[in-house]
Length: 442
Image (cartoon, rainbow, N blue to C red; front, side, top):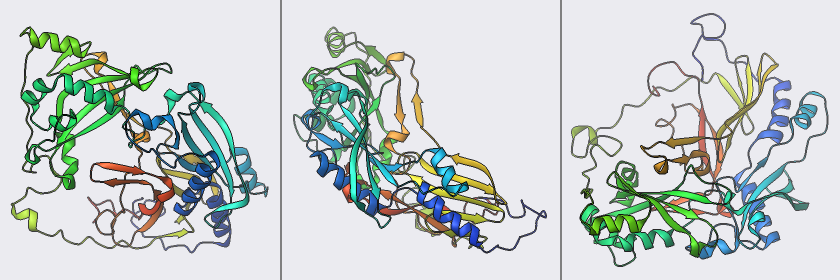
């Protein structure tokens, strides 16, 4: 985005320049080098890799048993393999051959020794038509320890420990937080009016290669169609799960209840039986006012339609799948499944000033009054684009914008996710327009 008149004469709107033949040719080269895989390519690569290895295309089954096989996993299960900078520059600037396009695939191997528990593979070359060349191959690039497997939002392997913890503390938890705990404890079905619980397994800060640790955070919601309110209704009860050795040996520690910390579940239970436990009560409910996006239900604003935004004037060109020319600027923009927007070969009046501008990782660290309570949301692992929906013209982007497509294979269904790259679909994940520096999208 840029402010009108910020280049050239202040306040003047420069005429839109038609894309030159040189720019169109460069756009073809930059798209070949840097444009993320299309949804057709994601599907083809995932199918080929799974068939070649005899693995599933995503996490299958439930509980720890699902980790015993092999499957494609994570927000970067199938992504473009970025060519080396030397090879890319040789093609862009020196007339060298175009490096073939390859994909990288991440596979969890519960069927191998833990030292080889994650495989990163190269698959290709791609044929440029949405599929793979007839001579395509799969080769192992590197192996990682099983404890370094990606965060997978379909992974329910820790549920076995969560159920044990809730069962042991069920009376206390129902007394404190309501009957929604009945379903989580696996001992009964919670009444429909009690709502539902969403359990997240977030990486804990004390994880090591030998000991993968997650922090369990439990939140409440009632209507799956308004699932987002769960972020506002986190229960004051959490614990770590230590994934050390076989899943049957995993255990809970660092249990937090109503601001009190206990090393083990047994310690919490003993304190309660001794009458020394401070008990709190939080039985969530909602009228979808403060905890829900948008105006309060029943208010006049809830029935009002927003005024249509102004249509922006087209002052840019987009060629192919993300090569952009705006005034004196040229660049290629693409959407990475995990890390989001990435820019390449950024030029001002034909001169390259940036080779790459992208994010390598993203974490949101949550501190606590004790180190044992600290954890982080790995935003890249949960993905910065994979959980998105289609952008809407006039709502997310001004009328007249240009869209950039990406691929989605994390498909929500209620409070569960299907993560299967062979079912990838296209989605509008970013838009291009010239900002007028006014508030909102008007």
